[in-house]
Picture (cartoon, rainbow, N blue to C red):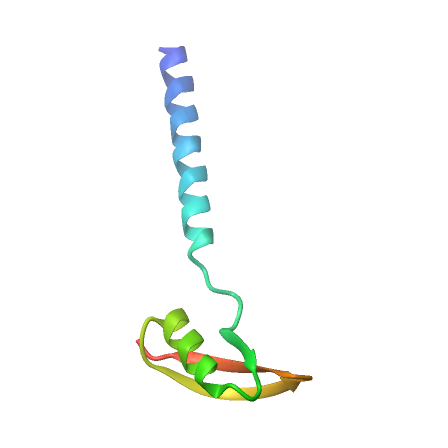
Length: 76
């Protein structure tokens, strides 16, 4: 009986650890950014549609030399 409880406890701990790994991997802590060459705005659309799998909205743009970082919001 005692070994049965140890096995159940070990299985429960493994299941809980697996669930923690699964749910922590699904969180989205980083904002959505897309980098593109400043002259080539078509690349922004291509990368943003690829990242968002559809519609998006540009919230802010920051220029870094020849590149621009666009903060986007996916419309889902």
